[in-house]
Image: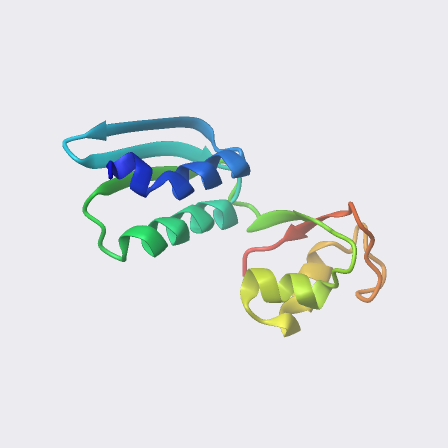
Amino acid sequence: MSVKAKYQAVLDLGQELGIKNGDVSEDGGVLKIKGEANTPYEKNALWDKIKEIGGEGASDIKANISVSDDSVYHRHTVKSGESLSKIAKHYYGDAMKYNKIFDANTNILKNPDVIHPDQVLVIPNI
């Protein structure tokens, strides 16, 4: 199996996330990937996928992923059935941090218990 085939899930995720200025090459059995993620969350998602496939100290891949907007952790589009606590659990691993998301979005949210599909929420760095 080629190194590129081994890490195809990383490349697919990069495409799904819309990584900009992407470049992929293979040199001497090492996959080299480069690109620009929109947010730190997207960069972390790529690194998590790399570690999932290659382990913590993978020697067959080198990645240079920059971030275009590190003023926020991510921007999340609300889906039907979501709540701020569910969103907080997804991004922070702690549902009780929903108030951090609410506080960062008081320009569009008036009540932490009322969010609507298709609203775009700022997920702040914490």
